[in-house]
Amino acid sequence: MQERGPMNENKKKYDVLVLTASTVDMIIEMEGTFPVEGGCSRRVRASHPEPGGEGNLMIVCSRLGGNVLPVGPIGDDYYGSYLLKAYQEQGIETKFLKKTQDYQTPVANCIIDEKGIHSFVSTIGFSVFDGHEKAPELLEQCKGFYLCGYHLSDQTQPFCGLAMKMLESACERNREIFFDPGPLCRDIEPKMLEEVLAKSTVVALNDEEAEALTGQKDPVRASEALRQRTKALILLKAGARGCYAVSPDTEGRWYPGFKVPVVDTMGAGDSFLGAFIYAWLQKWDLETCVVCANAAGAAKTAKLGTGTQVPTFDETVAIMEKNGYNFPDNARCFHRL
View 1 (cartoon, one colour):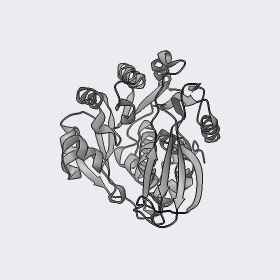
View 2 (cartoon, one colour; view 1 turned 30 degrees about the horizontal axis):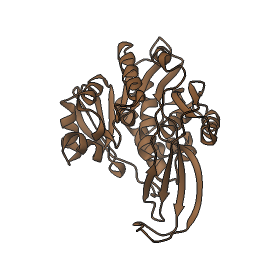
View 3 (tube, helix red, strand yellow; view 1 turned 90 degrees about the horizontal axis):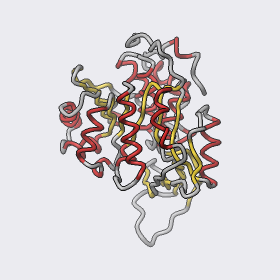
View 4 (cartoon, one colour; view 1 turned 135 degrees about the vertical axis):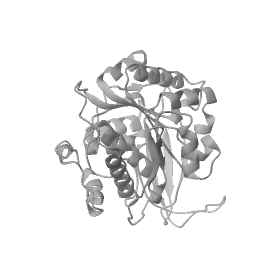
């Protein structure tokens, strides 16, 4: 597999800017299986915090060798301090994560049963933060911009306005724009959604999100319907089935997933996209990008938890090589474990 083209001669300090409302995942391993009905009692086998939300994507990208720049508020609390330390240990720059006194770090309680099925009980937090006015200027130092639909789901929040300003800045600077509509995509105002789709380079979403946006249950039909609304590359994440990719310039194609023992699927989609963003910004060809992403997603499902439990460089490469693919040699020297 060959690279898509030469690296951008105008070298940027960072690969991707991630607009984030930093979140903690509280991993709760539950005895027994779902469903859990009201009035019953279950024991917790273990619990511990991990970076959540965009943190999964950022850690995977960083471990493969990407230079990630998270921007946004972070709670001036215990969990905020925990996240800063965790990101720094993963080689992620944190100087533009601003501690904000009126912002409480959101916590997602991620309950996992003995079959690896998970459920979420979580909070969502948005806040203005010091330096947000200058945040769009940071894109001058970045190759790409990542935006999650969570930040567009409530137009009354100032974070939504900032997200759209960042999008406009990325578009003006001709940056690669990666959009993940997320599970709250139904709540995005239709006109705003169409604007984001029109400006995106890559749109990555799962079956349920694709159905929510198009009304099509079939993933191929949903992807083709989205292709009529954007010039972006559509990546439909389909779990063990792999990924369906299509754009106005490419024929739709399935890229099969890799078989692994399934332990926990939580964070697999984020791992997929973190790896894809890294590979895409290295200018690799589409097949290499998707294969790398599928390998990262598969490696995550073989592990329990999120955050620091997402795949390492070696785990991702091992799955690629086991299935007859090579991680480009010219990228190996830049990876971080």
